[in-house]
Length: 191
Image (tube, rainbow, N blue to C red; front, side, top):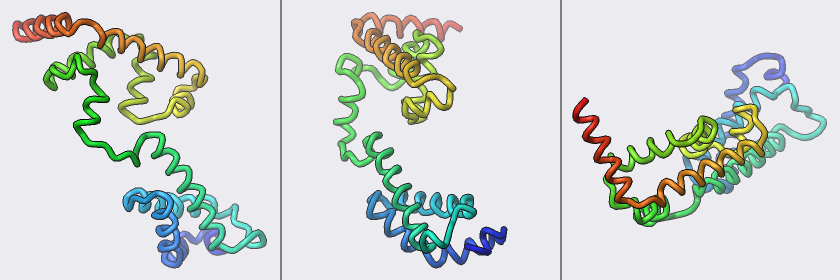
């Protein structure tokens, strides 16, 4: 670590060779997924490289310091994945029923894409942006607040207002939605 702190970056390879199995083992026990554990291992060693100046040999050994990084990053990642239902085993058919209300499931993929585009277009710009960041980029409301430099309360407000607006659109009669799709399809064909 003294060499790494002095700027000799190639020493990281030696540290990696000595401790990668230990970090991978801790990550596997916490995350229970090979891909996630490997990603976490890389993240831990990257952070060790970036924060080498913070290592103090008088406070503990390098092994303990690395284990603390692996444990804390692993627990944070597990919480992140749990919030996003990574560990929940669900059947695809079961998920489709949860994602799409029964009144919209009779539409084909093209019609659903059109309805989603239309629904998101009916929202104001802020609501649309928050919902896109949440569902298409997988960000939490707190992460969106940090990215947009907005308060968590405002982001939460736009999120729930947008969801309520989308629910209102989905609850409309399917016949009206189907009629609108057919009119749009005809207009696209005529163009």
